[in-house]
Image 1 (cartoon, rainbow, N blue to C red):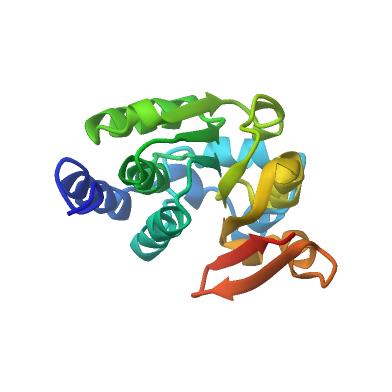
Image 2 (spheres, rainbow, N blue to C red):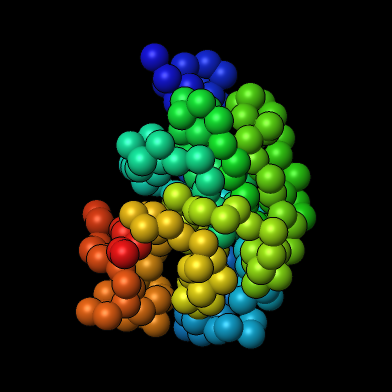
Length: 218
């Protein structure tokens, strides 16, 4: 039995995924696909885009959530960084792994206040709030200081254009063997070029249809 597969977390995850699948965002219809793609790849207008999409859950898939739990458990992770809390589904999976590892700290960053509030509610309901610090604001600021000396796992699941920048912020703290999971990384070609380069210091492969999994070498 694990934290992930028992109450209160297991039924909470079931409910939240149902809510996520039923959720709608009126703002989405007002943004053309072309405009959404432009904003998604912009390093200056990403806050505008995600502010307008604040009602969208944008969660990881259930399979990716389980993968995050497995990776954190198998590496006995103690320090995890997350870029893009949203409503906290991925946060719950990783915090469950920390609980089952015995202890740890997860630092997550989310700029949308309404999402921060909901994520904290979900963490309290799941009995995992004591393991998680959600920093509200732009990750380029919130993750620029006061990080653990050694980071075991990094999840990139925020504004895709910022994946390379967030990696650069935490890179010096990634221990050898640290894992980086980038959700929907195909929307960040600059990031993929960075971690897949022969001299990047990473070994990186696409995993399933929507995840890039990388390991820090050396």
